[in-house]
Amino acid sequence: MAALLAAAEQPADEDSLNGSAAVVPANGSVPVDPTSGDDPDEPMPVNEPPGYDILVRLLGDITVDGGAAQLRPKATAVVAYLALNRSVSTERLEEACWYGSDSTSRRKRLRDVLTEARSAIGSQHIPANTNGSYTAGPRLRTDTELFDWHVDAAAAAASAEAVLHYRAALDLVSGIPFSYPGGAGQSFGWIDLEHLATTWEYRIANIARACAEMYLDAGEPGPAIGVLRSVVHALPLDSAVAEALMRAHLANGDRAGLELAYKEHAAALAAADLGDPNDSIEELRADSL
Image (cartoon, rainbow, N blue to C red):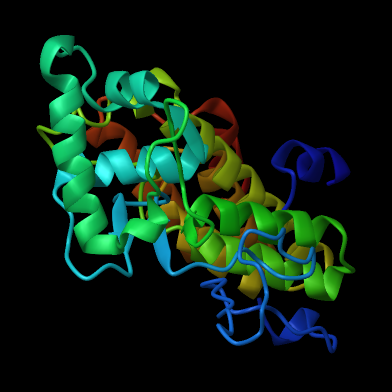
């Protein structure tokens, strides 16, 4: 399991691996008292997740939560790219969110989109351009940051607390990572160019498997099944997750559950025209008969 945890950079639930450890709320929101004199630009304490007023959700359909109005796809792409990278040059932002377009009118279009974004989420979250770059405000954050925080916290915690952090990280996954609307490819071309969807699919899958393994090591296949089931909807084509779910059902003495997991994975592969389940999945199914 150590190798899997290292590859995943680690995963978190329930009463069975209990202990007295408390977990931070999964939304990671840590309000700032305006009378406290705290500088919001100061680094957050290592035992607290990043606080936010505006959260860009990337681990599913890409949305910007917390603003006064819903953003259109172009503005969503600009805010997401800025929040993810924290500081980007004007040219890089234009190239990312107007991927493949004529560069002659990008500057005016960027100004118009930033006006829309600031009106919706607040100008403090997208300060004025300085030295040719835009910087995300300290309270504009992404769910990937919260995910990473929980994973890092799990790596430093005992098993009872670590499993809670792993589950909190996985609870942030709402669908296929970095999904954007059809027809908005020019705005979100940076996702494909930087292989962000596949990178995060792999990361989520590894963490889900590592989290499930912790439960199985503790002799608790039920919660392991719950962890893997929560991820299968987002990663239906991932063979490693499907196989781990089948093994968890096997450990639970649930042959019907194993068969259902197999059939769901096989159907997802067929729908994507990706052939049959791999050999190790077929062998696991055959051995369970």
